[in-house]
Image (cartoon, rainbow, N blue to C red; front, side):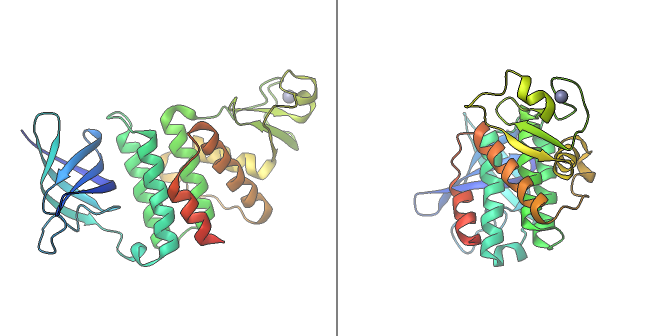
Length: 253
Ligand SMILES: [Zn+2]
């Protein structure tokens, strides 16, 4: 059966001399693995369209339990992004995290939109790497079902106090006044201090419509705190080990 779709290549692994298995986030079938035959040959028409990060029109053949890439045409290869090793490492982390979160048919397009926008802004230097990384992490986790409840203090319902605590494992916030008297105040509780600008940024990331999530500014200590929170939130709710994240952080030092 012949199938047409569009997708982003998230991962590739070599098999044999010339072939690769590619993991593709497709708009029609969610995340799939497909064999790209002869793709390592310089003459292959598939090689550009089937490399990591490429967003492509893809024609697939569905055989018994596996897909084969029949033809593919690049829509956007993010060529300039590939020239910067630090950016490519961050883009690799976006792909690895997306693969881990395993998009379904129902939410594949939300991930595609998030990935394409993040890669574009990264390539064009429209936003800092720190802010793009934070937005990607929290939004991707939210799409996957790990959206924290940041509406108000979980105890008293206060929308905003000067200092609140974010409890990443419970995925909720508690104000400073309530925290001391609540059952959450234990030695083992993981908590992050949350000042007003960072809480606003976190709310913006999870509650904004897809085309508005990148439209906020944060700098200095507040941005550093946002980065710390979203990375740790991600690591606490996943298996906490992404080779591409380690690579990115080693390049950034
Ligand atoms: Zn409270």
